[in-house]
Image 1 (cartoon, one colour):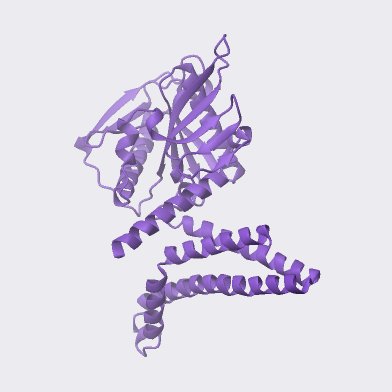
Image 2: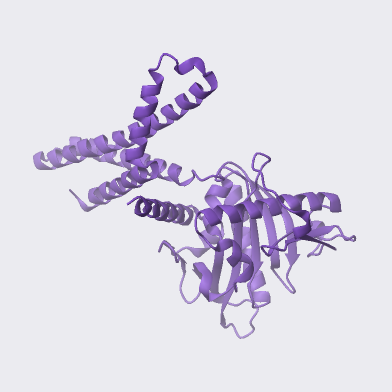
Length: 376
């Protein structure tokens, strides 16, 4: 087979392998056998609610198992057809087989992405917090560039974007800002964007046109609804009010309506200042605190330390997830997955899907390997 065929075949096989690990294949088949056995019991429908739940689970498992089997069978048949067409030099059959291979690849990639968004809170809306690192105007301008990047990504995907916190920089940019991005799977898509982002460029604020390196941190946590119970002891929370500040317009307020909450046991700090009413800002801040504590619990379950790191570690070299180089060359590189783009402007305009998909796949693979090792 030609190199292009081999690459598609390899990617499809990798997707099938990921799907099998994600579904915990052997246990999924055993569970499906159990559910089929239960459904044959004459007393199965005596408890209608339980029966409906099990039937939904059965249907989901059947769909998942059949999807993987269709991919495996389709790939095997298509490989045989391509090899036969090449042997007989049949251009027509080869063209049909190549089209089938591309369709299988597209289906495999679609199903692979679907597995990446199956976490506990992935379907939820999300908060996006951005903080400038050390470096004054340079880092503050970089933080505002990230704010624009995520806003553009969200708008391009049909999500609603609300700004609920904005702390303007000294001369330009922002010291910090908080967005709420609303839409299906907003948290699932953005959750791996948490970390430190590094920019290298010729500074527009340096009269000598020297190259500068700037850092800013991004923190992603899900909006939690009333179905998720998060208990907070109010005595553990320090409440501060202050006057909203900013460059003008919606960010300026003449009363102490902005609210900052500090959860003393964890060091988590949230703030809201977008409303003129202190009461509304307080309610939003409490909702954000519940979400941050929920995210900390999710991270703890996944044996991650990012919740503490967000408030306690330096925004600098040691905790980067992505590097954006504008000079002396053009390159954006994700330091976790190795994914690169030689078009930084497109990335800064919100073209992030390739990076997000790769980091989500990396995370799912790591979790599957940890689970397999634990069961070994």
